[in-house]
Length: 352
Image (cartoon, rainbow, N blue to C red; front, side, top):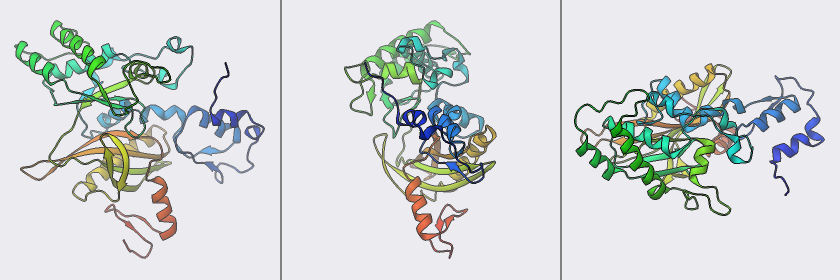
């Protein structure tokens, strides 16, 4: 059987891949859509620096890594699992389960089974977190296609009716009520999980890797589905260069369900400053951990009907270029100018 390889792997082993550039690090660089171990290898082979995040930094662009960044930076984000109380649910990947193939995600500790995912969700329900819907996300998913949702209201109501007294859950707690709840949730995951990708199923099918297998490979999180009178999905794009963080743009994402389909630039002024501030915090965190290049932060904003104020939650960090990177760069090149402190793009003459 012929072994499939990536285009980057083919380039690395080609005659061109063995050549290096004469320029030094200050005059040459490689810009890619997203980093990977193969991109790191190519950068090394060519002798030029990589201008985007390296393969070693990919964890910070996962759903779990995003939650860790938001917690460290004190940025509001949806309640979910894993959290600090769920360390016992995290495991490394096992390449023997997938024909010996080693994925980079195997080197990180993630929730990798429906059993542990169910326990994580059960612990949150036991703490009184009982949303109308839960969002389940593979650690790596492009344009929302690694996302799914599940309605656990009937199980949450039964739990609330049956459990009496203090239900606080400590680190690694496996009390009987939580385990019983987790068993019910695990069954629901296998039968009623609704994937955003219509081709995705729970179990493997011919020619299609199932959600359950993807969990084992990539890891998974679950968090509260944010609702509101006028829910929106703003985002910021930024670049980390050395220790400097530059906000490139803000925009409102246009979503079909949870799947990205376009955007409007800039985002709503009601929360533009707050998401730019959060983006700078994330950028400084990434810079402190040696990450360079493009990144974006996606948010969910929910308008309160009585006060008219907005609740804004950070939901994920994308450690790569985004759908609006190239249009924004084209506009800057054609018009000249950049984004200002108020989040608006102005030409060099000061025109909006």
